[in-house]
Length: 382
Length: 248
Ligand SMILES: Nc1ncnc2c1ncn2[C@@H]1O[C@H](COP(=O)(O)OP(=O)(O)OP(=O)(O)O)[C@@H](O)[C@H]1O
Ligand SMILES: [Mg+2]
Image 1 (cartoon, helix red, strand yellow):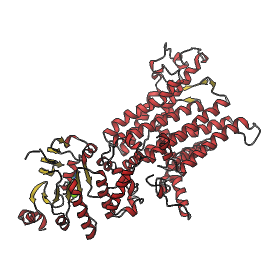
Image 2 (cartoon, protein in one colour; image 1 turned 90 degrees about the vertical axis):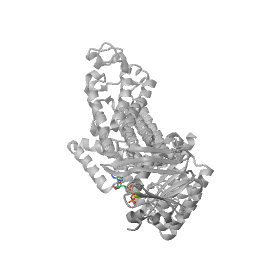
Image 3 (cartoon, helix red, strand yellow; image 1 turned 90 degrees about the horizontal axis):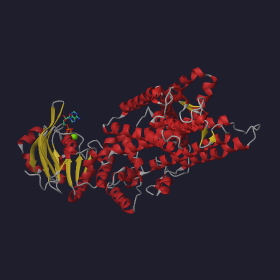
Image 4 (tube, protein in one colour; image 1 turned 60 degrees about the horizontal axis):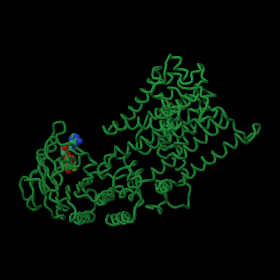
């Protein structure tokens, strides 16, 4: 049954995405670890982590596209789920420091010693186990999304109002995590990590391993998302996006559908955050900033909303641009980003992938007429 | 009249919008297997009546019972639909980004929970049923077209097809022949009569030749309540009905 589910989502586009990811998974380790440093084909560890970071953003964008592109929920707070996943991972990494901290306390992280805390708060218990932390990476964002969605969807909050309360959610978390007495390191956040699963977090091998884990998470999430979109559940979601009330009159409890997609999306965002933190070496409250969530919306819009692959492409391209700009012309980056969003909204409502589809549609092709969810007409109903 | 044995029982139903009474102490009963035509001037409350039955609008007063016992005023839209009440809207509403086939597949009677739809694989029975409906609604050649690209009349047919796929006990059909040619209107009348054998149907329509072709009991609504009820000939002879509706 599971194979059928994954196969259902496999069309040409999915094949392309998975091929590119597989290539990355082979080339990047070889170019970093095997190719000698002097060679033009050598990839530095710095670049590996940068790429890994982009792919984490791509996973966040994918999660966002699932709810925005296919269910019509424009979340302006998705970075909150990303950051919560990141904090869960960060807490694990803090516990791994052990007595190697500045104050040498074997149990308490430095910032707690600094605050004169005598024991670990209850919500830090268990985070010294990787399996527990990994579970929390899914459970914490998932549970928050579930509770939030439960109330918001039941009371039929939609459209702009829903977007605004998602923004309020991430802003509230931003303020909360800034407070020292919350026990998450205040505005410094969690950093100075030493080890993950016993491996030195700075070692090239570990870096490549983290990169591969990110590729795997992205590939798996992509397959789950495209499997869902191709299923009947996905069709219900798209129907809800466009005419929710009509779907209700067919007897579908639309709230539970939205809740399903929303919670799953939050879990994916949490995984993205958890993979991001060990690769950048820090998590602090700025990840909750409303601007982070809005940036994610721009990635999806640039790549093409409601295409999944476009979200990945948009996240990677925009962040490449960001790395370049913030290096070369840092003061211009925000203008460039804003301008890009305006341009895309005005001229490329379907993003880069939509542009690509338009260009290829003009070329004469001998292939069967394609119907919108990417299957050819004669496959219908298989 | 008692609610027992009825399929649908409305008693003293009132709805106000900002002080305007769209339904005013409306009472109406439907027996299982019955087909009923509802006519009346614009703004009489015909669509609003369907809204209160299907849970879109909550009545201010009154009783609405399904199968003599289920209180529809306590349920939400999806719950009411799952009891077996299907609806075709006055303005045809189909799922435009989906193909004709997918529209029917979504409507097709099947378990409706997310887990059911996630694991749904179309079986032979379902495929045959959808193909049958495509034939009945003459949409077979357009099965892979996007519903959004259909003409107004085709969307009407598709929505009727979706009703058939849902296989409800009670069908509420709001102005099914608006935008159809005479020949199509006649086909629709025949189709509804076929359906009526197995299901109960309430049809709202302004097209008198269509109502005549149905040949069923007619209820005339005006200003939110029942003005007259009976055969088309008897209500057409009713002076009040002529004054408020037919004579104009
Ligand atoms: N949601 C609403 N808010 C305010 N007024 C409404 C609403 N729905 C219906 N009405 C009003 O209630 C009255 C009855 O409307 P309804 O749509 O039921 O009429 P109808 O009999 O279906 O007319 P038609 O033949 O034109 O479709 C109208 O005056 C309409 O303006
Ligand atoms: Mg009406």
